[in-house]
Image (cartoon, rainbow, N blue to C red):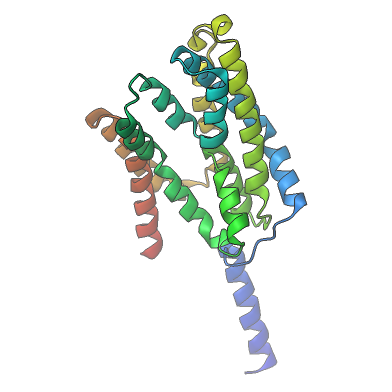
Length: 253
């Protein structure tokens, strides 16, 4: 191969790499800088999550949980939707089987979220990877995916952003559980809409152009149909699966 041909090949290869963007097969780093950047980036989002945490604290107290029990649930579960479903079902005797099945269905979306992180996190040690995934919430997952797909290789970004959400979530739960009698109905202050507002904001930030229209439409359409036809929270999982399958089929095609 001549030098000219070799140069053209390298130029063509470089151009192709630019078109496709950064390869997810590159190893990520795991550093204090990544953790710090993740925490700092997620603080504004965590403040919004805190509003929803107050709502959970109020409802948890109304369901009969103590402040300590509500805080412990938030610290160990870190899943707002599943926690709200759990306290809505909370009664004596505790319906353990119903709680387990329902919250499992609500949280199955984390399987999809974890799978999306694997191309980058498979390079990390199990302690770092699974330790970071423990702190995964919808909001910091979206922020982390945005960073990784933009070319960032800071593997600790997920952990830092997750710790930000975790700390604000637990603190807000304590506030809500402690001041539940003063707050009263959270909807009166619009706190029940906080989580929806956060998701809409993150969705706008994640929008990548017309290429996202098909999987997003599939996810939204299936979720709406499932919400009207099936009981419980199955629409969360089914909508996510529909969007994922459409994206996989389009990519493989």
